[in-house]
Length: 537
Image (tube, rainbow, N blue to C red; front, side, top):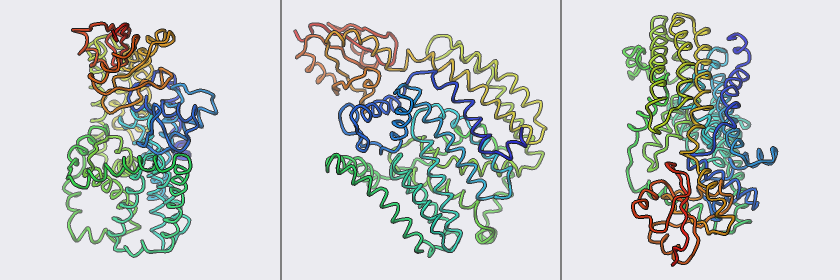
């Protein structure tokens, strides 16, 4: 198995992702607020033709560019449906893109080391956070893949005196990243390139003619998109977009945020099980490498590929730590580079330290068996989660096998780890999460309210904070949203029959003194529907 995978790393890692994602495409509904909003934006795009300027609940949606939604729309048009599984298919495609980018980065920095490319891919797809994000319909894996491709192209271009093709490719990938999620898509690669050239003492390379060509192509791509926005919506949408980005920039510019400790802590948790490498590394030798003399020697040694990857991890952390908005999804931006660096560390471990690391990972997974089984009975939701029990029973033999084979070579142990993670993830995503649909999705509330809406009752939404449009997708219509109880009661006073969608916290405030309101479903869910007849009187 390992020999075949070495020869076909792209196919091998794609197969691992397909095994974990395809069976779960139809497993659960959309839950999280971003999932629901993005589904509503897709509906607006397809139903009203908003291919450039995005809309949500009939209003401008300048929060994200349109790139990711073009993928969703393409999948929807090909399959003829806007069902939730389209969104899960899109994020699975993003996971394959990111894994392919990881293999490519490894081959760039170590073209003769086939084992590094495959090891880095296994590191990526066995990371618990990445496994989770393979089933979370968002654009972050696509964003991270385009950034990784841009980084690889920048390294290939900047390693040469002149490389027009690779430089233009680097800026094209960055432009794609910007179209998927925003300006960070160019900030991270450019900052990494600048830091690496500064490290190598070659900043003048930034003034090459190929860099000018790349910038011109980048500006042309985004300029064409901006021109399209102007043609279809005029200045209004561009002003909304500039205001959304500008407000964040001003807020970040006049306040100092220091989120680095938070990101480092969360990265340590979300990079498991590979974070356990920190416990087995030869720290005295590593710290001695930071001496000025050794750093100076390393500065000019080789082609600087690994230094480039280190900076591609450090640079985003520096940027993120000073931004007002904290999001763990940004960690995926440097996951491919971090996977390659981790793979290099794994392969360079001496046998004694490698045995200790494999023992720690197997021990962690063995510890997870009773935890999963216990959580099946004792959990936040108050009912039995069969998926957790199945996951614990599936994990037990795999974790025991990893423990018994902890002295094996990497070529035997890593495939077993990959299969273990894939096997234990399936019960979680096939059984546990679907069991929570009733508690977390807006679909039960919309289905409970559908007879009322078809009978002509007026729908309203008590908007949950700043999140708009979360009921639009499953209710199949634009719904007026009201912020605050006073405004909601004022709106209800002018109507006779009203259905109000709200979060469970809103009903909890109303339940002790409901007046004319009554809960129509579902009890105990995160999102509920409340009916009121004659409230205007």
